Amino acid sequence: MITSRPFGTAADGAPVTCFRLENASGAWVEVLDYGCILRAVVVPDRTGTLRDVCLGFDTMVGYQEDHQGYLGALVGRCANRIRDARFTLDGREYVLQANERSNHLHGGDRGFDQYVWDHSVEGDTVVFSRTSPDGEEGYPGTLKVRVSYTLTEDNTLRLVLEGESDADTVVNLTSHAYWNLNGHGAGSAGNHTLSIDAIAFTELGADNCPNGTIASVVGTPFDLRTARPLEAGWDADHPQIRQGGGYDHNWVLRGTGLRRAAVLTAPESGITMALSTTQPGLQVYTGNFLPETAGKGGARYAPRCGVAMEAQGFPNAINQPGFPSVMLRAGEQYHQEIIFAFGHD
Image 1 (cartoon, rainbow, N blue to C red):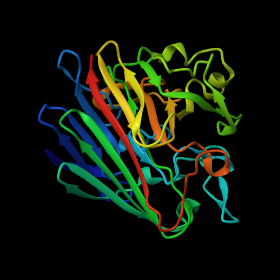
Image 2 (image 1 turned 90 degrees about the horizontal axis):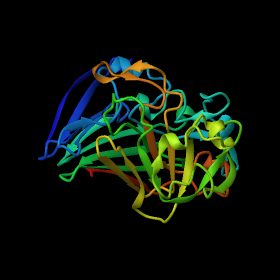
Image 3 (image 1 turned 180 degrees about the horizontal axis):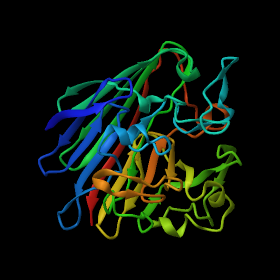
């Protein structure tokens, strides 16, 4: 069942709508047409009690003042960082908005997260769409984008990300939801355990962009082939952990096509979240620099109170020939999927 309600207005006065997707078991999800923001995800714990496990805000004011966290947002045109806010495509250099020191981050000054999207309901799916004009934030090509959210009867949330451009461009879309499987206001996520099906990660340079090195996880805090608590790694004495202030890195996922990439578990609630994706990388950000702020229901959010698991192309891939390409050729179809499957022990 899908219902909707008003959710205030954007800065330009455009009305914002909140859609609620609910299944027969009582689990539900809320998503806004503003930034395709995933506002709430409510699933049962091991006792059957429903818990909201997604960080978010009660009003538009919270989202409009969230200039650092990107809570729940669909980020693009290119997620993550592009070094020095520039790239060369087909022999031409493009200069983007530099919004994180010298780098371009999550689409620039006004990325996809800051627009009200067109919306429609198609059966059990909410579909958002918008056209990003040629030159928006410096990107070439007019890009038509479509993002759909579906909640299944087995408590699986499926995101399908699609796009087509009339000129060669760069596209890398992902969801920037933050998860705390004990409940969005439960405090530190350090006791969560995380496993990732990856034997390598991309090292960060001094500017927090990958330096081009694909490094083995073996013998490092990045070896999550066997689940380990987040707090066991995010303060480890390792130069890459110090560089990111904790986990803020891209893991090189094994395999291709839609496959299970990671499992996050909260021992307290018993809730598990298995992430599957078609994307080549998984950026894990443990909220190291989340500002202290009031979230839903007056909950206090602070650094490391949630973990973002962003299935995406590699950061700065357009400037690293050895990374999987994030280039979208004119007329080609962009299609990626991210699936969050919730359960409990």
